[in-house]
Length: 242
Image 1 (spheres, rainbow, N blue to C red):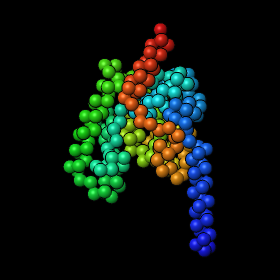
Image 2 (cartoon, one colour; image 1 turned 30 degrees about the vertical axis):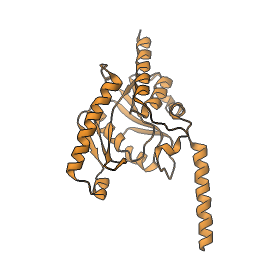
Image 3 (tube, rainbow, N blue to C red; image 1 turned 120 degrees about the horizontal axis):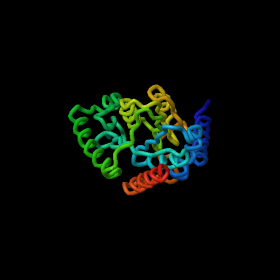
Image 4 (cartoon, rainbow, N blue to C red; image 1 turned 60 degrees about the horizontal axis):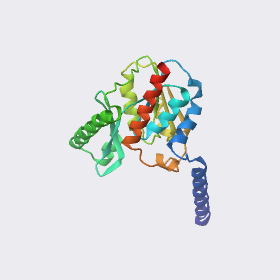
């Protein structure tokens, strides 16, 4: 095959990929949550079901899932440990209960010292505490012991944040743990299946590139929106229990 033929093949591949993106993109997190809920329809009205959403982006998705499945919604704050100077690149994540998951490959590749890891971890622990108070106020977290938990985010790339959440939740004796997202890297889904009972994704495109690539609108979710959706969900729960 000559260079010209190779170039044509590459161009065709790029055009196919761009076409796939246009077709597969979610309009926004709300639509993504509604489509995800359809993939989880077997859990409608399931007893002892709880939807846990990872703030901030996972909350609008989780809200739609919880509403469709008629399940209570709570938030589970996990913080990514970003590489200094390249904060979008995760070298690990932390979760409540002192849980920390590190990506040893990234740490080794980037030559990150223990001191840097501890500095970033301390900063993110403070932010984790701030967000828990900001989102939940004085409300207590819902109990997960004995529950079937659907853990929701707006997407999964490397999976470090989700892994930290899974490790933390496994310590709380839940009955079943389902990871559910609109879009995820296929290889990360395979990895998460080794530690979750079930992994559900609407689309698992390859190449994945990034979560935001699969949304037409991927604006940052605000603290205000997280609080509003959390309070609305709690109000519904109180009304359902009355």
